[in-house]
Length: 325
Image (cartoon, rainbow, N blue to C red; front, side):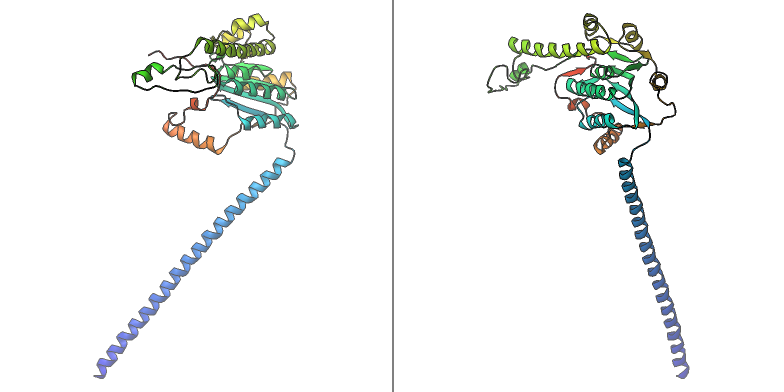
């Protein structure tokens, strides 16, 4: 009996000891987990603090005068009126640290007003510093309007440029609607209101009105070319019949100044505008989060989701080949 009790107590003592050991191990594990969570928290706090300090430092640096540099503006895609880009150009006019502006262009054009505002913004910059343009694959219509605002235009031999002209396109779908049994009704103050309209026939009076608007805008464009390229109005109008030119052809007729790339443009600035060859180049092209997300999705899914043509509104100075199917 006594042996049995002793045996039982021994088993209990051993079990109790194991239980204490297990409890101590569990406490250590929980303490280590709490410590890890605490370390993770303070690491996150540290990273956020570093980011905050960086933002504050950057904001302070923006206030302080920057070092002398050459600014670079990229104009690509379809040209529309861009308020952020307009602000960038306005800031360049008052920035004494900017010694010159290089404009990299690769665009088929865009809206007339978009090209006009970019042209006038660059002209204001050019009153304070030398401005040069370099064309890539394409520099037509409103993009060419942009280029002639600068003091010197560089292109590749294979660059497509020119297409000096204005276009407004519409469609008459009244025949299709009639076949579908749809009869659109429009109430307006005068016959020329909202013309041209795809749901109304294009009347002779409306066509004459639109042709007058196109002709006037074309005269403005031709005047820009004549003035900036030091060309007789008759010669500028002869070249402004909508045709396109290669870089070599454009050089032969006086629409551009030289065959070259950005390095050639910088060398020209050094030799002709007394720009220090060691100055750094700073990109001033405005970018926002919407553009960055759009670029990411466009890369993943193609241009179908974000058709740039949907951004166009108004009369166009744009070159795009017609597809005949």
